[in-house]
Image 1 (cartoon, rainbow, N blue to C red):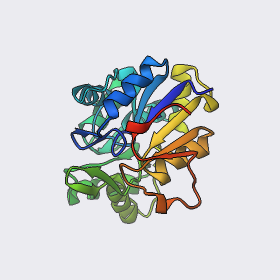
Image 2 (tube, rainbow, N blue to C red):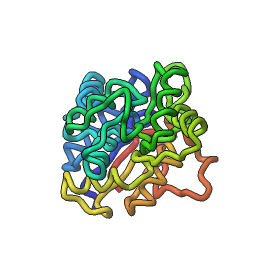
Image 3 (cartoon, rainbow, N blue to C red):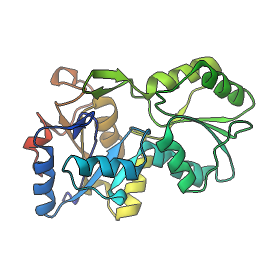
Length: 251
């Protein structure tokens, strides 16, 4: 029995600052029917608090404790595995805030970890600094490797573009903490006392959202409102396919 529905955000519930048509009503109805609604995004530019506020501004009820983002997963991962290491951040305010909230210190030099996410102020100097830190033995972690993300302007370069730059310069491969890594689902299961079979993942991207569900033993729903389309369904097959969350109901 499905007890919790985990919704991706970009391309699934909203595009840029606009909610997908019908999304607020669909989630309201889902809550009224007793389902637990959670939110999971690979974006690392906003903190969980910021994401919750954005959802609420669109008419989608959301509390900070219901929101999970790759910046938060990075922070939790570092706290669990490398609690004494400092971090050089290639990313935006949301990542720095999530790290600080769990007591991880971010520094400009002599870091034990280089953490990379989407950074819309990315510069050659930042790339050079990351390269220097990695050359001294720092660990390379990434929020995600999404190549693009949907906005009102169309598809824009995602964190994967930044990660690829750092990997190319350093000759190192980043360990990705966000989707499709199952680390995030383990956190959700711990926080909400859920089992894999009780979770349904709804998302718009086959190689992250649907693969995430498959790899982690959860059911999945692919929506057509974002990146992936029916023609893209080949080796990674969702359990259900719908046009948008407007027509979503529990299976």
